[in-house]
Image (cartoon, rainbow, N blue to C red; front, side, top):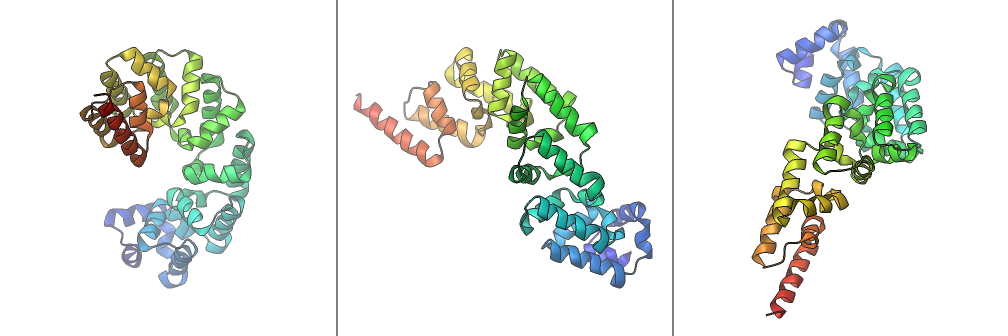
Length: 300
């Protein structure tokens, strides 16, 4: 125990929790069993000490598993199936270490095959989904993934390809609760933006990341910014429905500072100006601001 505590820089409560979940560790010799397992993971996944510690804390069962019979085959399978380089494989295990506790034949392979079939994915697109949200490997198809996809399809009246596109663009949606997050967000957007069912569906297909935004700290403050900037709620709503990606722009780092710059330059603050404020990269924004200022000066 003391060796493991020193080796992984564990706190007392961490080592106690590990022993409770994996009491068999106490019967393993550090030099014969534990050291080779840790050394293999560190070498195979190119881990620093902090990352190794994170993986073992997240999946202490690894210390009780056979490296050659359990860990190696799973890492090899994931790397081959998902066309991963070493860095990508490392990322997946760091985020979802419990994946190494699942059977290839009984869980990992059927799950990947199901996702590939349900979401109409080729191997490259499947790999991108898993890379962007590795935790999906730890979810149950029947209890989590399938009900969520079925709900999404029905709630927004989507076909299979549209569902696939949403998940590919925002795979984290599979980790969000329907009653606590997804449905309340849709209900708020539909009511506040005065959207029909079809308009709501179109909006979410344009920017699926809206599912993950906080209404209180992101969506509503951004909406209020555009209402105040335009001085007209209807025009602000119309602008955001046409360009929902404006919800993704930072209020403090982009929208507010640029609005102040536009006002100081004497520009007319209309929908076109606000789109430039929100959408333009920094260099393009400064060029546009300079151009608009010169045009304005020529009028006087």
